[in-house]
Amino acid sequence: MSQRMGGNVKNLSLLVLLAAMVPLLGCKKNHAPDVTVVSFGPEVFLKDTTYAFSVVATDPEGDSVAVRFDWGDSTVSNWSEWFTSGDTIALTHAWFVEGTYKIVAQARDQKLASSDWSGAPSTTVVIHRTPARGAVGAGPRRPGLCLHFHRRRAPA
Image (cartoon, rainbow, N blue to C red; front, side, top):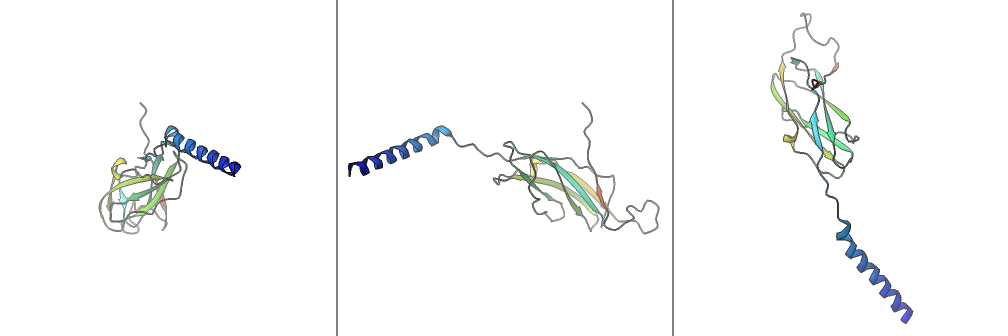
């Protein structure tokens, strides 16, 4: 019986020691990723044409990230698949009504910490009527053509 009691005391001592160490080890706080818009686009966007918009999402802890866009037309994309922190991520969208739309992006990490929508600089697009077929400068000639645009930063 004293052997059994000695084992219980050792187990209890080990449990108390582990419980006392938890605050000392500390828990790392998870921070939301940062998202930076890198797409810019053309001077003129045409309705019924698909455009790709890109962002770079960077997580302070290096967690994988996903992004989504609010396209400004009452639609929000689904979350993208997971990407490595710091990768450029592109999603596509087409507008079907002429108008001016403010696009913002949001990122989240695998621990589900999300950036604010306001954390991403917005891009404003103005959607114009697609010119009639045969008109000069009618835009993309192939249906389903996806155009990609990227903003380049000026050298410092």
